[in-house]
Amino acid sequence: MNQRTHTWIAARAIGLLEEEGTEPNLAALLRHFAREASVGAWVPDAQDAKRGGAGSKTENHVLKIAPYEGRERARSTTSKDALVAELGQHRATAQFLRADQRLRPEWWGEPYKGDVDKPGQHLPNRAMALSTTLKDLVLLGDRALISLLPFPVDFHSYMHPDCCTAEEATAMYFFMLSHFVADASMPCHCDARKLTSYSGGKIHKKWEGHWSRKVGTYFEKAKLLPWGVESIAPNAGPSSDEVIQKAQDIDGNFGIDLSSATVPDLQPGHDVWLELIHVCRASFAVASVVCPPDEYPYGDDDQRPEFDVVLGNGHSQLREELDMAIMHDAVLNTAIVWKHVWNKLGGD
Image 1: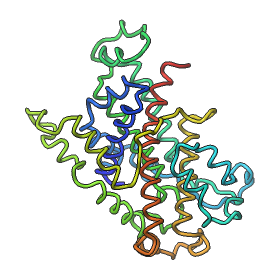
Image 2: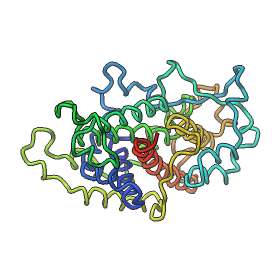
Image 3: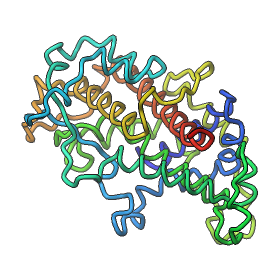
Image 4: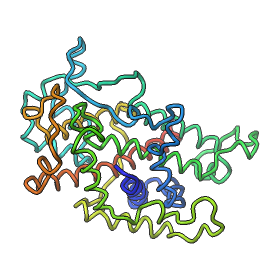
């Protein structure tokens, strides 16, 4: 997903949290910096952020899944019913997979596992690391940030103000986290076949371009932050009210309806890592619906179907169903993870 799409997802997730209303302080924190989502939600893909492997190496944005032939076959196998149950009824991708008849029952009976080159460096790990960091940042917050919490932070009175996390910095980390959650919802980020690669394939880039056109140019950072960092007139851009409303206006372009959506906590027994493992497995299944393994085998790197062949006008119904399911869940998943991180601060 490109910068404008990541920005829209983050802005829409702010609006969803506001509409749902169970965590008004978190929504208020993020709302105030809605324009800055155009930077924060895109930082992980920025060239400068690649330094030191901090977050923009390719492996940190993907969990490329492939058939597994190792000893832990049972651990790497799940049924359709089991995966849908792990995802929960609130996710549109779960509803899509439950109804799907394209993937044969035999497909669901086979083991699949992330094909990870460097242990510890893949998408769910990166999201988990950011989630843990965010909890620390909030607890180290300045007075404005601490005032949003429903409990006192005893050590705060001993901290020098310059050592405290500003609201702006905390919001930036929430937006960065949204980038990785959204990437887990993108099927091409979760399929190890070369046909789903961004540069070597013919689907990934065109699919993202298709979404970008639906989002439109409003969410480009040059329009939301026209002054850059040097401006002396930071109020020259659109208001947070406008950004969040514009994000909601895009819903119809993807056929999504979030008007009555709830933002649940993670499934019982899940943390951010495990939740996104299941989201990635679902995205892998979706990629296998789009490019059936019977036609495009997992071990065949020469197959490079065009976007128009698998999701063009001849498959417009499938494309529209997936546009709705993927974007619905990219927004909802972001709100779920944000809310979970915030709620954990008041729990154990």
